[in-house]
Length: 115
Length: 116
Image 1 (cartoon, each protein chain N blue to C red):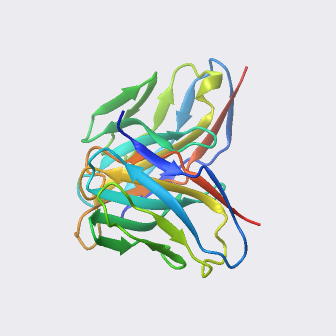
Image 2 (tube, rainbow over the protein chains, first blue to last red):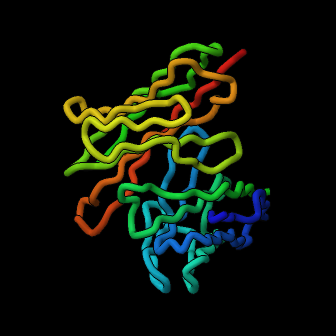
């Protein structure tokens, strides 16, 4: 079955460490997205990529970095510059740039906690 | 600009009660409207959608009608079950302000708890 796989499901980071969250899709979707979700809040867009080797900042890109070397993969690195990284991170994809009439397919998320 | 306003929660209902979660929107052009559901510890799943005015989206007993005149897309279910306990997000897909493409705008989510 096609879908999006995020790993790990739970991740713990020490202060000052960089960590990388994995997102892989086998839907042959062109566009991929990273969102951050905090308790009681909606989703905020971190980065998105509409095509391989290209990506754009979203609303809260500071302290994060991404790469898109392969169509099926869009890893997110949470750097030590992100001062409040504890959150639930969601990866999504769409067949073309933007949700259009079909919306996004979401992964099951990674919960990152700073210890 | 584009935005979605959702009814604040949390909402607690008894099993078999009627559910309404209000959603209103502001958008340029002709957006598509969506409801997503998020179960505890999981990602978002598409529940239903409507792509033009007066369309009704439906799935698993949930319904929502795209009302252009009231700019609303309220989610309803006639008889909720314990298994419906989740967070529900209203979203719209519309052209960006700079017309460079199409983007999602999410509401803040409404938490629903159904008690037996």
